[in-house]
Length: 215
Image (cartoon, helix red, strand yellow):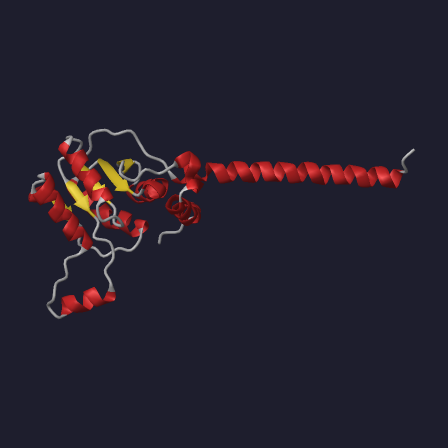
């Protein structure tokens, strides 16, 4: 017959084993679900404007052009993103360097038939999604827009939607989309190097936004 001390040790060992297995199961489930955590898109519907977030040279602008040509909105608003210090210095000297967003705008006009008057580049320099949300806020209110289609990177769609909704409030409907050219493996995000990197980059930022970060 086992002694009481041995029975107690055996019971504790079983509990530790069960808790370890439970912890590993929960950890594995959370790991697998990270793709679904960072990616969140909305069903398309008619809107006042298509707002293209910075950070993509072709994918996002091209999706905006397709949405415009399909008639989902009559205008495209493009974030200029941030500028390098050397670029700013050259502007002060009177030397203009064509930016990424200007190149994208030119592509939409010359190759995809989007009228120049239908595309506006935000003048504000921004270097994160929260700043983009604040930058577009004045334009939304000035024009009386109530629905925006926001084109973001797939891995940043949930964070972008949260940032825009936080900045614009419930009176403005935000419809978040990402480019079909950016095929993000939501349920197997770890199998590709770029999606693995993007997920681990976005997940902490999303949590930080939920906690109130505005940068």
